Amino acid sequence: MLNLKEWMEIVDYKITNGCDYCWECYGPNTYTLDSWNGVNDEGGYSFSIIFDTKNQKVYEVSVHDYTNGRAYRMINPENVDKHNKEAEHKGVLTNQAWDDVDYVDLDVVDDFIQKCLAIRAGENYDTRVQVPVDLSDEELLQYMKIAHERDITFNKFVEDALRRAIELDSQPVVSTC
Image 1: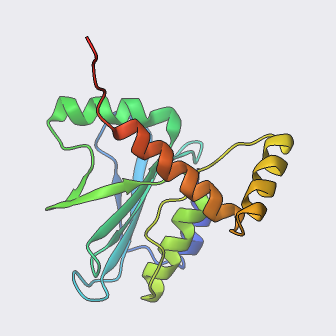
Image 2: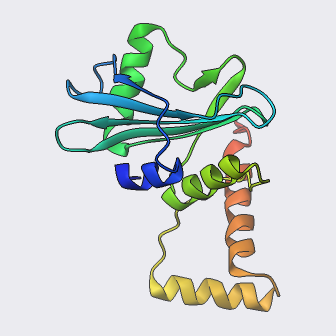
């Protein structure tokens, strides 16, 4: 998870708002900071962080790219269930960032940072989501060899494999009974 120092560097230490976080899912000492460039459309963005004021633990970070109508978020994995339960209890759509824009939840800190920096700079960025893949050294070597045989990069090989797995998983189950 991103830490407070990393978030402050992303926003270039520009804080535009702060207040107590009013939900209970992250505990009693939570505070939220925002950094907004003051624009809601072309060139507009805002960043938010929710953290514990006692121990500085970060619970959630988000970025809103108003220019492109996109929103990204990371919730500390230890707190996702608590957040979702409170959202359900409050009757709030868990994934809605604003209007018809849903959050894209990210798992890789560097993915979040790169998107934030590009949004702040007004640059194009990769909208794909990075997925952490944990492979043993033996598996890594085997898959790199296969990618080499197919004359594609290892990243392309993994991306293709993940796409195929998702496609297979989303196919309807046909009963033969």
